[in-house]
Length: 89
Image (tube, rainbow, N blue to C red; front, side, top):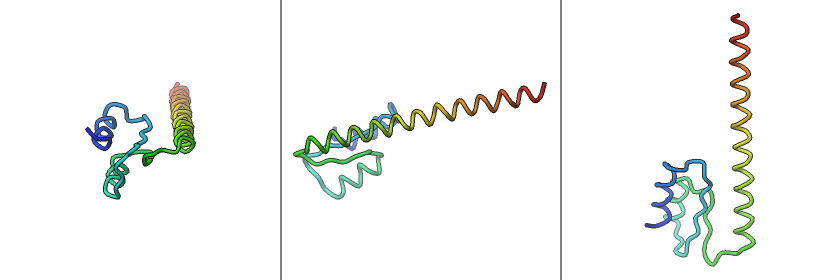
């Protein structure tokens, strides 16, 4: 199984997980396929460790921001529903 096929399987089981592809066989077609299947980053071997760590850090921060945003939206939704219910009573 190659990385692009793995992306497809991961999308269904862990949709919110960040996905970074590291390939030793880069091609324009492979990069396009990875992006189309929702890869968050595409790195080419040999990987620059500094760039890899920065990529991981960036995507972990984005994932945290998305989680916080989702949590805030849930809180807003609940607060709005409580106001609606209170207004009916």
